[in-house]
Image (cartoon, rainbow, N blue to C red):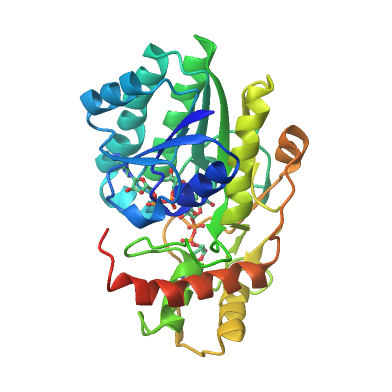
Length: 331
Ligand SMILES: NC(=O)c1ccc[n+]([C@@H]2O[C@H](COP(=O)([O-])OP(=O)(O)OC[C@H]3O[C@@H](n4cnc5c(N)ncnc54)[C@H](O)[C@@H]3O)[C@@H](O)[C@H]2O)c1
Ligand SMILES: O=c1ccn([C@@H]2O[C@H](COP(=O)(O)OP(=O)(O)O[C@H]3O[C@H](CO)[C@H](O)[C@H](O)[C@H]3O)[C@@H](O)[C@H]2O)c(=O)[nH]1
């Protein structure tokens, strides 16, 4: 298929682009390189541009007859979204609208959208099904919920089919060390811990130890980025075979506490970096895990890397390589 990948130079998008290339798709990446990197695009053509630029989007869609759009481009830092909400409604919601106008005008039949467990907010239950009411508690989650809704409404009014993937906590890296999370000023737990191992940080904090969990810290469902990437390739195959529009959780259905994750990073690396216990971070739900029944049944998806040691091992290997790489690459 001829596919457009927005945000394909970023962490998750770059892993998906690589798998799409291996599956034989014809790829165009559109990315403004704000948090992505030229070197991360290992298949297809990179067009540097911004989704705020409607003329650039129109030119892109006029040049290529896309059969599918995979939309990753977004800002993703929850605390930043609280401090600067309009940046998130602008880049995540309005710029998705810009993209959808072109999808509609050019009759693109298939769309895969990167959504998030943040759309669920602070649910009562800890294992989440896709049918729960959406109640995001921060502008990041709200900006993604609004994008989901626009895609659903456009699909109802046209021939567009979509798969909306709600990612839980994405981590790890391609095992061969070619790709990984290079996001500047990362806030994600496993990335932060790996930066402690490689001396890019002196230490880290555990945000809250008084949660009602097995060790008092928050529980999350960490999914390896290669398993998540596979879900995107399978989503395209599913739609191409006539599958109907779906919203699918992406997670393993089990969780680890913050302390458990840090312990694995220390054990795998052999580095005992300083950890400080601090107050809860605003807006953190106690425990979030995916009910993944629907993605297994709909796509036939099964994970290959469902093991925290493997996730952390690949993240650590990448971090060591990335530190060396960084000096030579600004883009
Ligand atoms: N990382 C996670 O744990 C996680 C969890 C849930 C959902 N997601 C979603 O997955 C997607 C990818 O996240 P990521 O972790 O790879 O982040 P990332 O920052 O590495 O990737 C985002 C990419 O989009 C590009 N981009 C941003 N704004 C753009 C614009 N206006 N025009 C063109 N390109 C633009 C960036 O340069 C970057 O390459 C996002 O939509 C995010 O909301 C991520
Ligand atoms: O230095 C840190 C970083 C994180 N945490 C804790 O570790 C857990 C995971 O935090 P992350 O920041 O890694 O991830 P979140 O669960 O907050 O959110 C991530 O997953 C969500 C989906 O579940 C959204 O998609 C969101 O974009 C993405 O950042 C939280 O309890 C957090 O408080 C720490 O204790 N110390």
